[in-house]
Image 1 (cartoon, helix red, strand yellow):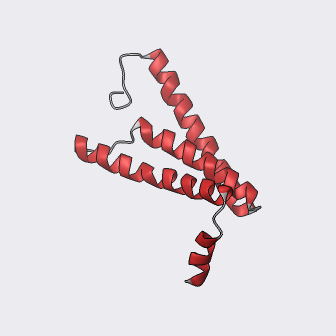
Image 2 (tube, one colour; image 1 turned 30 degrees about the horizontal axis):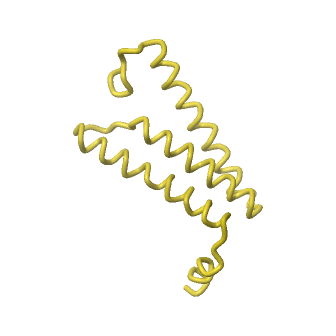
Length: 104
């Protein structure tokens, strides 16, 4: 457990960025849970994809900084998928302005 506490003892800007990325990414699950509970059905709200993208980008930057190829590849793949999902959502909203993310 000392390695865990030691990591925080040497906190710097990049570690803070990586931690912020993980917190942002993790918060998307709460957003999805609350939205589903509110509507009493499973939904993925727009905020889920925004949190995924921002958290993924921040975590990707940290992964590049610590030079961890497995982490870099995983985060890069996610960032591409989250970006593509947001592209589809906003494209559909432009095509059908009366349809929200939960209506069509």
